[in-house]
Length: 252
Image (cartoon, rainbow, N blue to C red; front, side):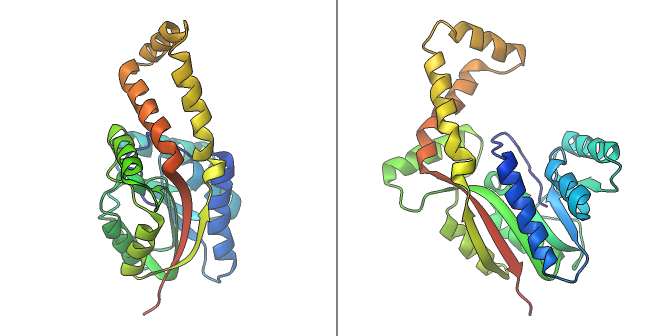
């Protein structure tokens, strides 16, 4: 589905991707409606996998023209008749009953108006349409100090304040969705990140620091900015969770 307005904090692993695709496919296996799915596009990877492996008719949406270009080229290279268009998750350019399923893969974490996104998605789904979302959330029981660490991380990565599982549940409930399942996949994704942030920060205290900074510069990256993002992520990761939500549009 739903656009990834940004894709800087990418946490999708092969196992994560398989879980998401399985969620969408298994839901449609229980239904007689023809499979149609609209995904946050990015470069089109997960969307094109669904189209290729499960026969979904895919429409991808992204705000970034370059992502649309890459996704379209990737679809053409796989000989798939998938469509990718520029669009805003809060103002989707589709009519009612356009899709039987939607997915948002690590995209809504960058959008402050998640309720508005869910409402817009609800307006484009068929009755009993399915929404599958994976996103980064904050633990519900954080202390004030821990919350500040998470907020600092979000600010460093140009995110609004992170939501919680309870917040997502409430937002879905307010926009005509019935939550069917919540799956914590932290250990398969962001739960593994801290060893890499630890290694990076340790290397910066070694003679390799100059080499690392030269390599970052060679890719037009700002070493101090990257280090600040990694440091903020390192401090916040123990209080973050990576979660899949599966919801179904309630019939009226």
